[in-house]
Image 1: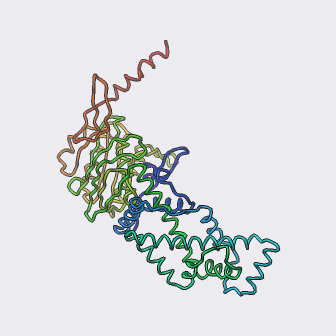
Image 2: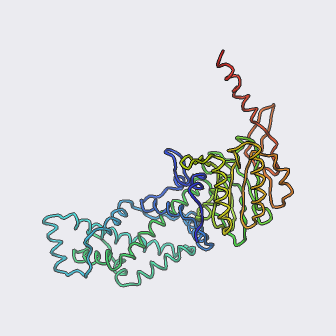
Image 3: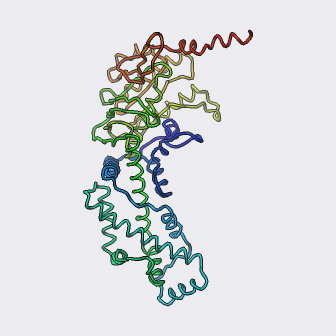
Length: 442
């Protein structure tokens, strides 16, 4: 099993860049200094966790890097070179002979060979990587590490209990390594112990990601989520959208008794932004990342599905309304075997008012009967609330609008209750739309 989501969800909450020059959550977190670190950050974001201990351990590790101000020396060029070196062809499959190694070294001095240079530099950089991580592990052990870091320290300590690694820790200067020693280490790094070298390389990339995430948490005032053994619960204080410069923060509380959130409010009140913020926070929390909130406690979900910016399926010949129906049906099938967070923004916006009313009422009523998942739904058909208020597990919230001297002020604050605001006519009047049309023939 793994945490479920789909391309529509990734697009809705902008985890990765889908349009050139657009913002993405990935870019927001990407302070990595190596290509391998950048790739690992992508992998972490593309593979949220579904295990309580895995999430807790990653959260604790990132928080540890942030709070202890640990820095790891990341040299992008040397790490890239090691990657290239490890994939070089014609790797040795037998221990080198002293005579052959010395002869190769001598011949290279007479006539420099590119492959020999890659091996020589690759060995040097790999030795430096090994010693850097060994020294780092010793430093980390003195700081009282969380579980994930401690497991890595134990693996490194086990490596250095082997004679070949213990000898590496005694190397004082890479320049004094002989041609024979270079050949021995090449045999070690690219053949007998290649898996261990790949582990150390991957560990350096992981620490690059942890430093990147800790920097993002500091820069954007993100917090570290707490995963709870409770069921069907999301409690967030001070939720905000991380793309906004001065975001308004809101609180939200899902629990087994109130697992469906109905959000109302007029156009431009901030419903879509709020729902995106919720989706982003839950997605990041399952990745073990810091979240855009003052605090967050959540239970494990099997997945997240959102429908915020659903397009017409032109290739399939589907209308927007039919695409919405198919989307709801698909998610309903997933709900049969999973506990999910499901987010729908403006249900049935692609059809007439009567069908939108009937469809929204039917779907929300049906969702309310599913008690092992959580739902956040907004709709412009406020009239259906009179049919829903008697359902005990629905919580009604609205985005507040304050009218002063006839002008609306958008507060973007989430309040208890149901919005009665209608701003469509006001916006038409403000933009003088009718007057502009009438001026066409004048």
